[in-house]
Length: 255
Ligand code: KIV
Image 1 (cartoon, protein in one colour):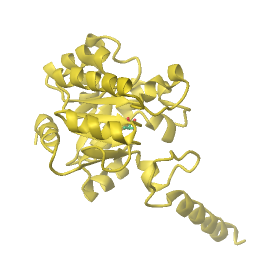
Image 2 (image 1 turned 60 degrees about the vertical axis):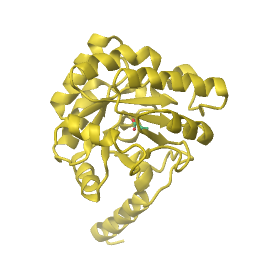
Image 3 (image 1 turned 30 degrees about the horizontal axis):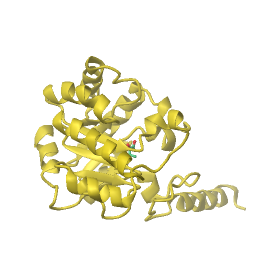
Image 4 (image 1 turned 120 degrees about the vertical axis):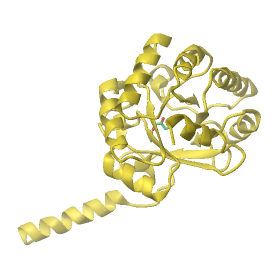
């Protein structure tokens, strides 16, 4: 399947089978998640925190993204590989298209960018060049410094309407799906019912969107120093690692 066909298959999942997306940042994780049957592998700029040790995503550069997108693409996943456009790499439509093309050259099949109405022209520039775009609304991690923290969105009818308007603007510009981050469940449910493309939720409550995305380290329990309140860990890789190191020290040192 081509990248466009894969993105279209995700778009057509609205109202049918829920979409299961996970972040992936490296070759072995991408292979394992793909073998497990995940629909979308998002090389998210969350890698700034959970892989590179930065405090937030505003430190992530295009070079970081290209390196990790290429590693994930080497796994040749069946899942759609989506790469994030990092902050300040899509300040104009021309720059957005250039950045998207570089991510695609590294192995991304689609790209994701944050924001609504003010990003519509950038989305249009990329989709018109034949590159599928995923939107991202609600809490926008690239704006965490301006907003002074990670806050819930859609708490008032006005906020929800602003998100809906932003969503419609990027849908008109051609996005095939939209990540909804940290939107209160009632608003997420309303937006999902109102919009014509699939919504993929994180921190919006369970079963409020057309699918879910999770940061893989939250699922695996491999980044124990910060676990978002909405995370639902299914493993304790940090604990298993600590135990393995303790047993290794015992083997090597004998005590
Ligand atoms: O960067 C990322 O991992 C993301 C998810 C939180 C959706 O954008």
